[in-house]
Image 1 (cartoon, rainbow, N blue to C red):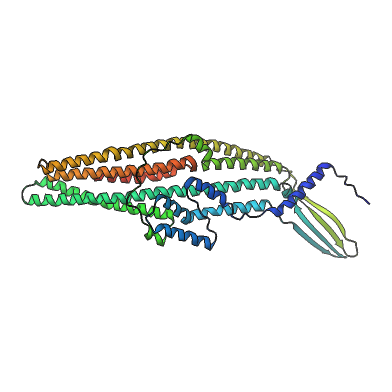
Image 2: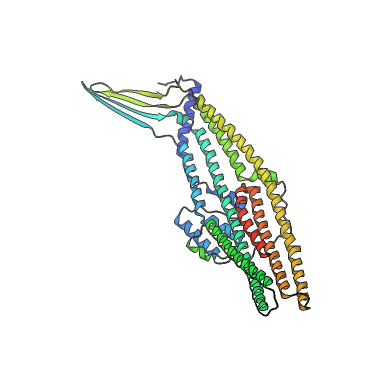
Length: 478
């Protein structure tokens, strides 16, 4: 005997969709790399170094070995970035968000566990009720819910890449600042040596009656100032080094950190990025993240509209048996009736969230374009100043020093005038180091503004070190 299905076609399609969704629940599983491959690719394109997700002892040991290898020689800017990406524990902690987002994604692709109810009544006889309920609404909306969680997972990947780029930029700037601070300590020591020589000579000449007391006091005052400035420069070098140590995530191996003697030389030609504003809109991670958030909010709005009136819907098999009576089979549907809340508040909230996300995306785009223009102006200004010191100020100071030495050999000036000129030459070199440091920091922030993230936080952090080194340069020329 054949049984014909008299259900309407839409019902058959709904049943088919439900069965298809149920079949897909078996496909929801975790990816081998936890979604870190996309993060690694995005970060490597923007930093030149590949980060690592340390989930096993073997991975941690390999990263530690690589860090030890990099610390065996004087560190470079690229080496500092690599150490930070392998060794920064806060960065590794942030990567845990990927696992959380992937777990939500996998859970969205699996049907909720069914519920089972059992009841037993006794009196004139024994009556037993049994029921198994399934979340039908969750089954029907599973594809859309999984798509929403997929969007959120992609957002988590972008956030992880954004944090990676931030750590890389911080490591690069901390490295430049630490090397410059160390280099300035050497020049401050030379200033102090000059001041000590002038102070001792002034003391001897005053004792012989060939030098006034006022002139001697001036030389002693400069010696005291030079001593104080060297102490400040040494402390700033410690501060800059420890800031680098923190970004690199070094602990007991911090004493193994070795820095080069001087900063890299200024490039022969300044960079001129093409279509910089469009590049920022296409490549910057914060712009991409804002777009993903708007898209995810839109998907969530669609899910909210789909479940606006049906909040909870469960269906399942039920049977009942009683003593001395045949078992009765049937089904049970549990539905929350929208008598008081028709879902309009949830829909209005979702629409407001979407409008908020769209406006934030536009604001991030405006900020990105502005920051690229500002960063490029800072980069070109820093380049021109560093080139001015390299090509004009320092060579001019040296020529003046050579002329003064000739005048001293001809007994046309005193030794104190020669020492004063030496101090001015050192001050010019300190200014050159400071300008070169500012260039490399500006170059790093320009690259970050083009393809990474907003450099505003790094710019604020760099003001204090710039001010400190500027004061040190001024003191050297006292």
